[in-house]
Length: 130
Image (cartoon, rainbow, N blue to C red; front, side):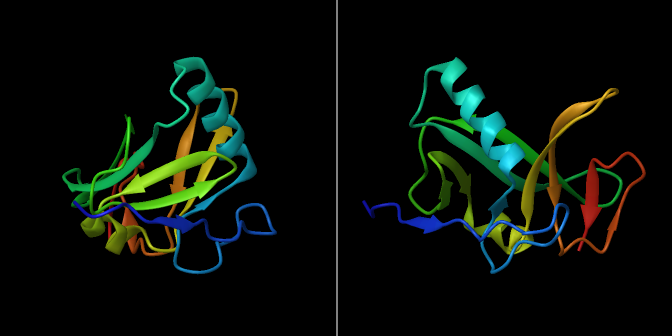
């Protein structure tokens, strides 16, 4: 079995809403804070957020996020301030340079992926194409 290698997080964008630098996966301060709180509530500090790209939706591809207790053997693992993001190699091809943001608004709250590879997205924001 091959050991999982942790990748450093891309340097967070100095400008809110800006693009992360490098080819990694960036996490905004708001995403890190929210993930730290959720991990503490779950009492699973070794767990992480798995982000995947799957076929589906009106535009052809859709994001999928779920908790994972640990990384899989071939996952790319990105870490910042104790928060881990796991991405399978196939999904990583679509997610290079993406930044994870947590938005807390009056009408909706949640995680959003700002993906510079998106060419178009559907009106509901659930699917995209590259």
